[in-house]
Each structure stands twice: as structure tokens, then as C-alpha cells.
Amino acid sequence: MSDALSLVAVSGSLHTPSKTTVLASEILDRFTEAFAAAGLEVEPTLLELSDIGREFSGALSRSELSPAAEEAVRSIESATLLIVASPVYRASFTGLFKHVFDFVGQYALIDKPVLLAATGGSDRHALIIEHQFRPLFSFFQAITLPIGVYASDGDFVDYRIESDALHERIDQAVLRGVPVVRGTLPQSLSEYVSIW
Image (cartoon, rainbow, N blue to C red; front, side):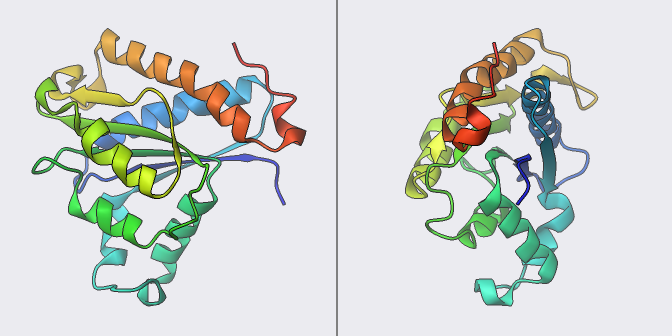
């Protein structure tokens, strides 16, 4: 079994290009850099539902998933750290995002650290993280990291993060999140991790 940390980000956006995917990718990169700087091997994975979402369509039970969809679900379940992001769509995450997580084992995410992130047209949607994401992952008994990351349209220019405030929120989320992730690592790994 590999000692590499599996960092998996899931973007619930249905479109490409996507601000949500840009945000999820940036957070994934920052965590990857943080753990790599501590001398740990890291395997980052970005799952874009705009790419693999159709693999889930039509499936009503896990046994009906295609091999590609099953592989995606297994990567979510086996992640050391899960980063989940969705655009706000009709006051919640996208239906496809929820559909994917309906196939995740009920007990597969117990004590797994999860970073919550979302994008929306304005700051008025920022509470999606507390009102939609956190209850879903509380159901899974996951450990949601203390700081989620919300971004609005004004934080991006041509699908690039241009907001210093958003960069600072990502920095803070990683800074506060790393010790939580470290606390969930096997003793053989966690004793070697000294970040910040």
C-alpha cells in the first residue's frame, strides 16, 4: 500500500471552462504544495463532473455504475483529503453533484477531512457552505475543515482568480486545514509532518 497522500477534488460544475473547477484546482494545488513541502508524496486528482458526469446518468444503484464512474467513487472514498466544490444552482449544489455522492458508501467518509467550497454570482449565496454542504458531509460523519472557501463572479477574470481576498481565504483554509488533515494520518506519516 502506498504511503502517498491521496488528495481528491470534485468539481460539481456542469460546464467547461468553469470558475468552480478553477477554484477547486487552486485549492488542490495549494494543499499539494503544502504537503509536498513537508516531504510527503502526494497524489492529486481532480474529478470534473463536466467530464465524467454522463458516466453516472441512468444509474439507480451502485451496481449499475460504469467502470469509470465506479473508479471515480472509489477515489472519493479512498481520499486522504477530499475537496468538494459546486456552483450555486437554485439555492443548492448541482443535482449531478448530489447524484454522485448518493453512490458513495454511507460509512466510507467517516473521519475523512473535507474542504468545502462553492461559487456563485454574488456574495449573497455564501451561506451555501453552511446550509447545504456541511449538513451533507455531517451525514457522512466526515470532518469538515473549519474554513470553507466561497468565491463570487467578481473574484475571477477570464477564468483566473484575480482577487487578493480570495487568495487570502484559500491561504487561510489551507493553513487551518493542514493540522486537521495531519491529525487523521497514520502515525507513521503524521509524526514527520511539520508544516507552519
